[in-house]
Length: 632
Image (tube, rainbow, N blue to C red; front, side):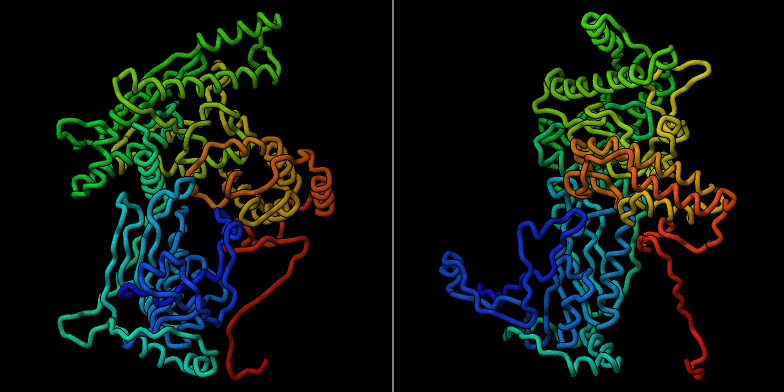
């Protein structure tokens, strides 16, 4: 303040789970009631004529208010610094945070901020990062100001702006009154250990004025999950586009749900860009002119026209592709405005098969035509990998064809459930530069398609969502049509359940079996549950290695199997799971086949994310209310 460092406050709790590895680089400050004299680096010292500054846990005492900081993770810890600080009289807390977006997460963050001042009173000013972190995370902003549990200001959650400032007027007398009305707070404050402070001889508040009205509480704005899928990845893609030097995106568009969802997200990005330009954001306008390569003072005014400049879609059909998916892809591309290509790739596949036949004297055929499982899988993989090679070639050369500079980023379109199950070809067209839906579930994507049809102006999304999911990698016959869920041996809804139990509740095969016996009681017998769990873990372990080369994806889901940063598990498992599967068989035998219904109907892990994993045992707990005059 005034060219003087008042205090340096080190971080006391480090984020070291999920997406964060802060202990890899830093150490937390553990001296909770200590301020040390820190010698400043010589260049800083010479610049401000100050040789040292207080360093540690403390607060700044102005003439009229006490101000302290919490840093990011400290908001969510069980023993946060603000408790001791509030009991020492600190009224205003400032939190500079880096909290990434995740579907359905904002309410957790808002509740934590509100609760931070409900128990102790005070003003909490929460400032969050906004934008892509240069990798898989998107920081969604939504800064806010809270006083005594009431939100009085909330910033936007998804925005293309680089900076957003939030302002509110608060009455600090309300903090004193709130705290003074709580007897237990007064008692605890009188016994709390003293926290050291640094005095600053300045006033930063104003006395009562009739014209200065405290900001009234506001209703917190929450986006529905479908809106989060639309806006979060759209802003993330825009950051990638403007910071990478790329000239646009190229998407292999199959006409199915996943690639169509990605196309809709890019279309939403274009709509957001035009909206911000219309609202006068000069930075967005400058970026859009550069990326779209506008000349002579022109700039984008229409989302479809802008999409045609920055977005290629390509339908790579084979003899196994249907006319329905081809027409759906074309219709969606027209609605978005992308430059659409329809490329038959049968000749490339045939050339590869002819080469193989020349080398080996054998030509594989599909299972429906009498081939083996090995031949059938290989023929599907050839198609998928040819598409990947072609996609990257087009991304490199199509700008050149149209006399544009730069290159296009290839977008992937595999979802979190397919990654978990391994229902994707390694290095196929789902292998790309980045993937905006890589940790979004199929269930949420289908809801997004329905929402997008109504709110983004892409009516064809409704037809795409209604179609049964299929890879179209096998021949279509009158008595056979390839379907994803039949191929996988499980539904996408079941995959979401498996994923949450595996990651969030940390279940292995045995504990997952136990949980699902309760969750699916009355629907499946224990032996049927056992077969489903075994089937999932067999293919999960066989395909886990695919996560090591998974396209960098927008992080949106708490059960993502992404191997690089979030889900740091081994990728080599014994796919037979001999001990675990044998234990499941023993449990099935103990329960008996006649016990098709488990009598317990209470909520079990998997129904809610706020429960913990169950081990081998089970306990009963109870909480209730009663007559205060009755002794216990």
